[in-house]
Length: 269
Image 1 (spheres, rainbow, N blue to C red):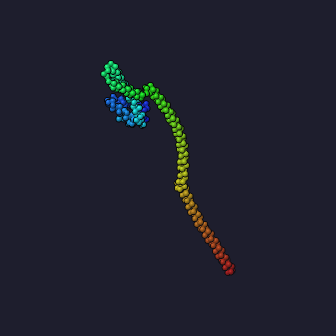
Image 2: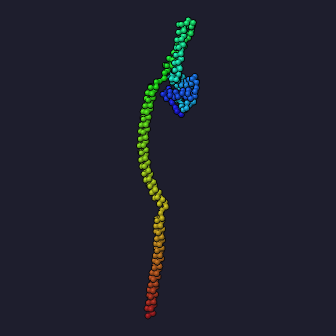
Image 3: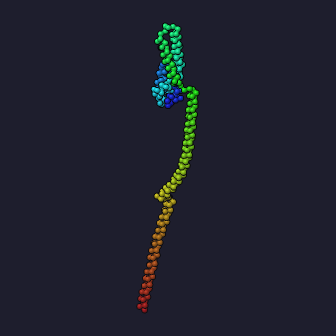
């Protein structure tokens, strides 16, 4: 929905004239009804979608005094000034005819002349009142519109500049964030590598590898072989010692026997 601040703005005045043309030429409403509807629109209506083709919402209503002033300027003076002017002319014509008949014929009473003068004075007062609320000239409207467009263009250019500056700062910030993310990625890769090495070392400490197990098995086998060799050496040593003892005993026995035999032979002789 289109929104405008107030009907007294240039945009609001243009919308009000479009609403009048819609009611007058498209819907073919009567003059009194059009005047009543447009006056109500000027003083208190917010939603104008009921009176036109485009949905429009007025943010701030004007109230009775300001709304009536706008209604007199943009509706009554702009579209009904010729009608009011024609009534003033017809009143002046009636006054002139009445005065002329009064001067020529005495049959015209005084109250008719006074009534004609009051009617013309009333119509002239209405004419003054309507002309007092004359609408803004088209040239000044165009000039104000150009000024407003120029101001809006400057505001737009300033906003575009601010947006461009914001985009530049955002681009610089994004570049810094990209560099920081790149550094973070490098550090994360280094941390992952260090963690991987630590996990590998820990896993090797908890469960040794196959080469170490094979080496330990070979060492255990060699130790068993060495133990067997030592046992065999001990057995051989014991056997040698036993043989030496038996040999020594045998020699001693032989010596004893020889001595005994020798001593017995000597005694016999």
